[in-house]
Length: 321
Image (tube, rainbow, N blue to C red):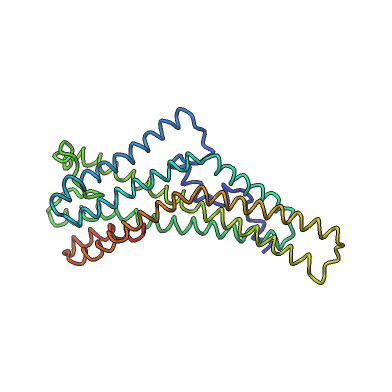
């Protein structure tokens, strides 16, 4: 235990490096300086997300639905919802960056104070911090395993068609583009450009899920750790081994009460800030879930090679739901 305590890094950036690195990659980290260069990066990211939404919605509205291609409509509709959702998440991070900065500062302050705690209380802080870090790890594994299916699927299929002497380009996201792009999408230069666009969106979406979704669990597990420490202190005050007089008991209870109010205020603020976005996510899930189930049923009616091409699609749908 002492060795684990020494290895623990009492800093939010280092304790939750998976999530913070993801936020740095997509430039949504609250401590990144908002200068002209950042504005340029933000416009590129926003353009990427908007283009993905426009392309998938265009395919859904003007091609898939009129042609009665329900399977394609469900896939492109889901991708449109995904691009819209991560845009909302990015906007949320920017709009509430000052609050997130404050939450991080509070956690860093608690980490600094914990250095002076007794060993049992430091162990509680470390244990709950690692629980929060595990959430980030789970999101990293799940999103990476899912998102990598798209480029791998396209590359494997192109190799397969080449092996069969029937080579053709296979896009990452199978959709119908606006007419000007559609007639050129199989031109090597245009195909590479569209493939790069989809790959960038794939990476961007992954960093958003890894960077945003673990934040609330990280904050809440830290608060749970602080409440656990307060509970332990209350038990110590009223234990049989306690030799405190009434004045000391009152002082310690007062300190516990102040800390408890701070924790509850933080919970209340987190709830008020994140509730809208989580409600939005839950409502989009009511759309994504039936689309995902439809994809699973639909894939069973495909041929072997078509079935392989659809695996990554319905896996992602189920995962997002």
